[in-house]
Amino acid sequence: MAEVKKVLVPDIGSFEDIPVIEIMVKPGDNVQAEDPLIVLESDKATVEVPSPYSGTIREIILQIGAKVSKDSEILTMEVISVAKDEEKTPESQPSGSPSEPQPVQTGMAKLNQPEATPVVKSASTTAAKPVAPPSLLPKLDQEVGQHGKIIPHASPSVRRFSRELGVDLNRVVGTGPKLRILKEDVQAFVKQVLAGEHSTGSSLNLLPWPHVDFAKFGPIELKSLSRIRQISGANLHRNWAMIPHVTQFDEADITDLEALRKTHNETRKNDGTKLTILAFLIKAVTAALKKFPEFNASLDNSTAESQLIIKHYYHLGFAVDTPNGLVVPVIRDADQKGVISIAKELARLSSLAREGKLMPNDMQGASFTISSLGGIGGTGFTPIINAPEVAILGISRASLQPVYQNEKFVPRLMLPLSLSYDHRVVDGAAAARFTAHLASILTDMRLALF
Ligand code: CAO
Image 1 (cartoon, rainbow, N blue to C red):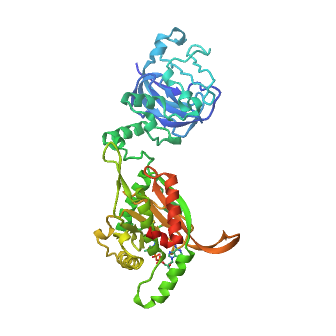
Image 2: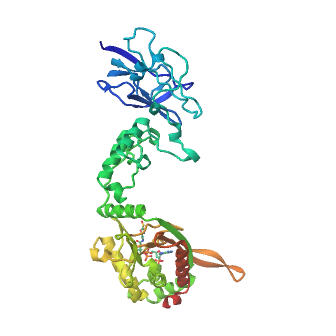
Image 3: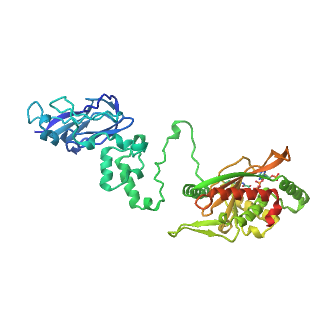
């Protein structure tokens, strides 16, 4: 006849107040003896507490987060039979009536001490004995392996589940407490694999985005992102995540260039063409790209053997800050244009960008991009590569610096350069040579002739 029994936490060594991090059953569930009921977790191990009986769960007494010790009440259940091990093991026979269901108290290792010997106390004796089902013991060696290697943090039943499905837990991101891998995480991983996300590498397998009720902390307002921002945001996100970026910093002495620019702007005051530093930069970058063609390229990953597509045209994109977000119009064939012609086109495309009137064609075909924040400020930044290009040049604000020349400090106007490059295509040494060469051209624009 069925009988309602209370299930208690078995002996967990000298440890007390171990938190419950998972309750694996609910009222009405039918469980077999030794099925896991709850999961406890210390700093170093997770431990499942198995059911001592077969039967039906009646009531869950404790809650997730409760701290338990030996004999804490877990749940009540309508018992059908005792665990098989107990029936088989003579010394685990209950001292009372043979028909009375008795618990098999699966002992547990000291949770924080790998050297501790697991013990089991049978129902009939309190003498320590080796524990029966090893799968239910805390697997301390599975949490921190040899040589300190971090091993996926998951309970034995989740490990068993992942083994059944052939899932490598190293590839699963845990969403449980302390990033513990839950059964649902393994299921989600399998779904992603079936959807092809893991096999193509397009998923980063990251934790879900945190959802916070900000209104709890103070007043807030909601503002939609502009269409441009949504499109550029998605592109920036992909480029940042998929390209191994490195940024090379350098500075160029543009004292003479600035003098030339100012003189030109004063003498040509009335013809409406204002030269900005960016026009000279486009010219100088074009010359540097001719010397270092791998920066004027794209990586083609579409075949088994990756190839570099070197472009023999020099279409330079430049980032424009507009009220609706970032856009990148393109100056075509910059190598065939003079600085004044480039400056005129810069002005035309920038104002079209700010008015939201650029045509798709105005923003296509760039082989290299410049992002200039020099008109605003800053000493350096790490621009994100505009894929499928392989590099981008960031420009910050030029400032007068004391530079040691001919045994004395002289004031020079120094322009900060930040070159982000795709490290799959460009080596650090090549990037340093590129920025050094670019700096020398900006210092003496005559070098752009060669
Ligand atoms: N150092 C010092 N001064 C600089 C400078 C620099 N690196 N770059 C520009 N300036 C000066 C200009 O010379 C100009 O001063 P004068 O009027 O005295 O000549 C002033 O700053 C304004 O220049 P500008 O920024 O309007 O013109 P520009 O040709 O240099 O730049 C443009 C045009 C379209 C690139 C710029 O307006 C812009 O939108 N920049 C933002 C780009 C951006 O958002 N990048 C970030 C992308 S990643 O989020």
